[in-house]
Image 1 (cartoon, rainbow, N blue to C red):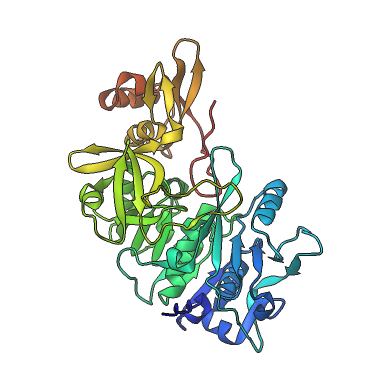
Image 2: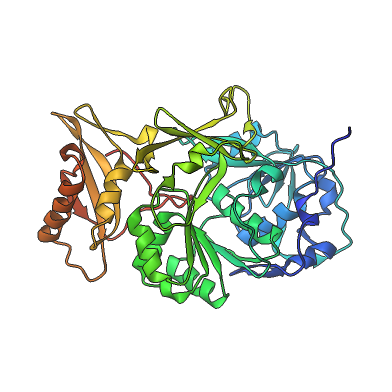
Length: 451
C-alpha cells in the first residue's frame, strides 16, 4: 500500500491567523499568493537548506514556505559561533542558505528573505517529508543536530486550542520551545506575537499586552525575570505555560497571584524527547499516574532516577557520522532529568550531569534553588559549587532579592535558617551573595558554570 504524501505546513494554515513582531505584521493568508523569499520556493526543491536569519518574523515565514519543499531544513539559532556554524553546515550537507551573511562557497546557493510577503505567482513543489534539524548542545557546547519531522513536532499533546488564541513566547522560534508555540499558533488558526532577542522583558510584555496576547509560554527563569521587572501586569493572559526548567512551587504560586484568572500549566519537553505532558493542578512535579498509565501515545518510565520517554514526538535521531543513538534499544529516550518520588508524585531534582559532590554526598543545584526560592524575599537564585580543600566542593548561591527588600546580612541569615529546616546540612549553602540579576542563556535557562 503506497504511503500517503505528507501535507506540508503551508497547506495546513487557517486563514484568520497572523504573525506579528516589531518588524511588522503578516496575515498568513497572504502566503497563498506571495512569498517572503528572494526566489520562487520551487527552486529550492529537494535541497538541504540552512535557515540563518536574524529576524524571527522572516524566519517564521521561511519555515512555513519551505516545509514539504526542501529535503532538509536546518534551524540556526542566533548567536551561533562561526566555527559551530561551519560545523553545522558540513554535517547537514547544506547546498542552500536562506538569510545567511556568511559565505559557504560557490556550491551553496544563497537566498534572501524578509519579514513581509511580496505578491507573486507561487509554485511550491517537492512532496518531501522535510527533515527539521534543531540544534542542542551537550556539556561540551558543540551543537548536536536533532532530526525531527513536522509530524513529530506538531503531534497532539493535551487539549486543542481555539482559533481565537493569540500566542506569545519568550523563546526564540529557532529553538524547540519557541517552535512548538509557533506551530500551535499557525496550525490552530491562531496568531503569534514574536519577541526579538534584543527586546527587554518589560518591552515584550508591554507589546504582548497591546497585541492582546491570550496564551504565553516561557521558562521559569523567563517568568522570574518578568515578575522582577514589574511589567508582568502589562498583560492579562488566559493561559500561562512554563517549560524548559524545573517549575518549583514558588514560581507557580507567584504566577497564580499575578494572573488569578489564567490557567497555569507547566510542561515537560526536550528537543530529543518532544513534549511528554503538561500539568495544570498548580503543584510542582507530576502525578505518578502519568508514569503508570502505559498504553498511550506517550509512555514514560523512571530508571536509575532518570525520566525516560517513548512517543511519536521523539526525534528520529542525531544527524552526522558517528552520532550516538538518541534512544535505547527499547525506543525510550533517556532525558537525563532526575526525579524523586514523594507521596504519590514525582518531583524533578535536577540534571544528572549537574550534581555537586560535597564530601561524597550528591547535591542537585535545582533542589537547593527550590528551597531558596520559597523564601518570600527571594525572587531568583543560582546555586553553584565552590572548590574546597576539605570536601572537594561546597555549595554557594547567588540571590536576587525582591524589589524594595534590604539585601543584608540579616536577610541572608534568615534565608539560610529557612533552608536548614528543609534541607540536609550538606545541601545548605555555605555562602549567599546578593546580585542584581542572573544571566539567562539563549534557550531561556539559567546559565550555569562551575566556579
